[in-house]
Length: 286
Image 1 (cartoon, rainbow, N blue to C red):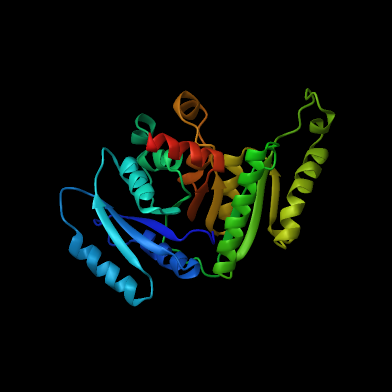
Image 2 (tube, rainbow, N blue to C red):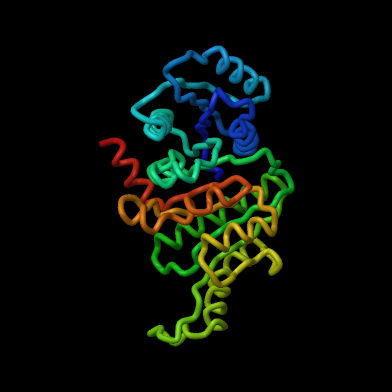
């Protein structure tokens, strides 16, 4: 996270509890980053409120400026401001959608996770991060460079947050159930599958000094295991990756980050592979 020098903070002026602003102040202080406040609104002028916020941040030693604008939709407004201002992280407060509405329409925060060419932190509650538990949820089953790079980034970001907050770093990965019909006999036994996943986790356990009590490698679907472990340990923030599935596959299969979003009580930091970030940025610029 040390490379992030400017953070885009999406504010909802209708809310009294600006959790996104609280998180952004903490991260800006730790990273020495500037804040760019964004109000996605064209019906009312909030410049007085934004001027006051920027003055308050400046007094606290945090450089900040703001934009109030509206494009065709919320996601497009956020992404275009992100690129215009050169921000390396988006922080936005998340409000769970009505289940019926979610079944009919893609929630705005899901769109942001799919299309934003930068990490997205969705702030969900007022729980403090200091001395909290940070959960790095990775897929240790992927073999390609894209998965490897994403895993490294997830654990690195989670470790940075744990270090910043004097918190505990936890590592999680779900593994598949054994299948007697598997072509590779290794995947026919639960013990050998667990051994493979533990071996892949060992480099993170060693590098970040994660004790066994904070290592959670278990059988089951990731979208079930992540909320369960997060609740058990009381995670204040969960760091997860997404492959930004869209279209029919996104509708039918879903992304783990999207599925677990409303099941987690803590904040969620979502990362994407570098090549996907580049691709999404190219799409916007076209």
